[in-house]
Structure formats: structure tokens, C-alpha cells
Length: 291
Image 1 (tube, helix red, strand yellow):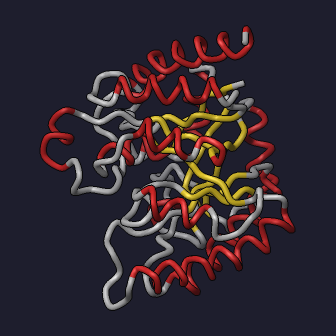
Image 2 (tube, one colour; image 1 turned 120 degrees about the horizontal axis):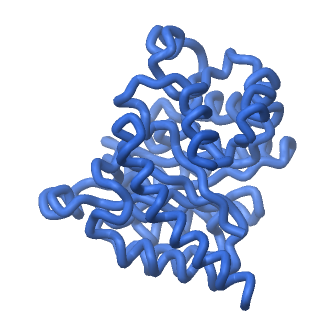
């Protein structure tokens, strides 16, 4: 069964805190949430102006709070770019700490990716080998804690199917999967439907993101990802691709969460997105139930 969630970065520009996102989820009958993790503290988060989670918070206390709102984590975002030179020590620690926190918070999916730019001074083979070593280390922790490490198409390597294929095959393990993203694959100049079809057996979490006409016209093929889409899902040029990706999810009988990613505008834009996506989800679940 397909469930609906959302990424709290929708409310970055509104300077909401995490609990206000929980309130929005409860009000709109959404039961899954995805957020970024902060490995330490920051003034912005500490003052209550950031809708993400610090790993210094008590994960069991956060979990109990979420239960009061009838909300669970679908995924925690630990996407420090693995292709940059300092990732070998910064990202490894960050992802491992996120997994340990996630275990107590009741979350099994951890999102990872690479940087939008090709790293300077190294070959593609060297960059891939470096990322393989990092995934090898974090997968040891993932197996111990029964976590799923997702690779999201968001950067120079991960938005290219030939490199994504190699990365997903770094290790033969069910703990290494893919977070499909309809918007990032599109803005990177790829066909989201072909991307989804190619890696459908590896999908364990999905980001649903539309793209505005103006952004597509000016930067498609030059960007590798979108921080936060500035158009409601259903109002952009990626609509047909999103619908066809849902057809693939139906074909594989996807049992997981699709996470909305768009600018929230304090509620109105993401609520419009939610209404449009909810119709797709209801239709997809109905087709899977009758197949």
C-alpha cells in the first residue's frame, strides 16, 4: 500500500519548527514525515526556526511526541554529499550517528546522495571508489541496526543512470536501495519514467516533485537537483511523468511512502499538492487492490 508523507524542508522558508510540522500533518491527515538531521546544534534550530531534528535530542522523547500526533518517520535525511573530499570522515560519522538515532526513533530509511558538481582533482573511477568505501562502512552499521540506506538521484553521479547502477551494485545487499525522485531526475535532463523503470526493483522510498515551466526552460540539464520545488505538485511540467511513475509503482506493488517535496508557503502550496497527489495515491492503491 502506498502511504503519503512530506519532507519538512517544505517549511524551511516559513521558519517552522518540527512540532509545527507535526501539527500540520495531523490537521491534514498525513501520517508520515521526513526531515533532515543535524549532527549537533545550531542557533537557528535551537531558537525554533528550523523544521528538522538535531541528533542531540532524545530520540525516544521525539518518538513519543510523534505518536501523540499519529505520525511516524518515513525517512531521515543524512544526505551530506558523499563525493566531496571530506566525506570519508564527515559523512561516515554523520550517517552512522543518524542510523543509531533512527533506530530508537522508529525509522528504518536513511537518505544519502552525492554533490551536484564533479569533484576536482580526481577521476570518476576514484570518486566512485571513494563512495564505495563510505557505503561499505555505513552498510556495516545498517546491517547491525536493520536499516535501509537509500541513494537519491540528486548529484553529478546519482542522476546519471550508468553511475547510479554501479552505485546500487556496490554491494549485494537488501540494505542498499534507491530513493526515487521525480523532480531531480527531470531537472537533470533525464527521463524520470525511464529512470524509475530501470531501478524499480531497488526503490524503497519516493520523492514526488514537480518542476515549474520557467525552471525547466532555463536550467533543465544544467542542475542535478532541486532544493525545494517552487511549484505545487500538479501545476508544473512534470505531471505526465509523475503519473507514469505511479503506474510503475502499481506494477511493482510498491509498499511504502511517497514523500511530497515542494515549497509549502506556510501551508497553501503543499496543501494544494497534497490534494492532487492524494487522488493519484487513492487510484494507485485501488488498482493494486484489484490486481
